[in-house]
Amino acid sequence: MKTRPSHFTDRAGGMPLKARWKALPRRERMLAAVAASLMSAAALWWLALGPALATLRTAPAQRQALDQQMQRMRQLEAQAQAIRAAQQSLPPLGRDEAQRALEATVKQHFGEAARLSLTGEGATLTLAGVSGDALARWLAQARLEARTLPVEARLNRQGSGLWEGRLALALPPASPAR
Image (cartoon, rainbow, N blue to C red):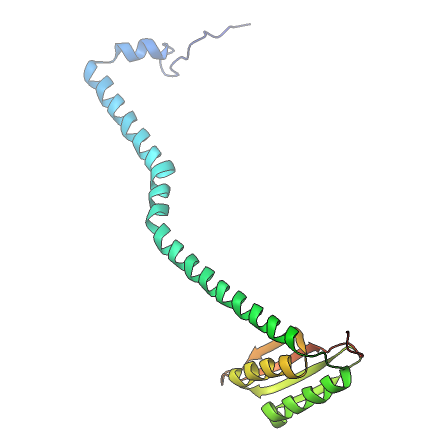
């Protein structure tokens, strides 16, 4: 069995690499060292420095976008807390009163563009060609007057900008909690 030497050998000449390196003229060794340095620098740039610098360039814009999102979320949180506080300050409402109030708000805001179906635990509102503003105003009024909350929405925006679809609502319990 043949044993291999502990140092690498050149495939072409069978000479150890270290000896072959020393056998090269000084100029060729310098050119090879410069080429290896350039390749190492390029690899370092592409693998480490380039992506890091690109991240640094885009970081301010990303931070600004995230700050705007955070500000919007804080506004929505404050709005939700205000709605919750307003709703909790209202006297409890029974299911029958809530159903009557809900039917009145649907007729007032949508007319024939919506149909309300009352079920045991809640109600389903079917919309056909309703503006977003009318829907938002109705939701706010239904929340306050009928103490009803949306639990599921399947809405589609039509090409004309109007909304269609279904909205499932939760009604208050049959007897008001005291």
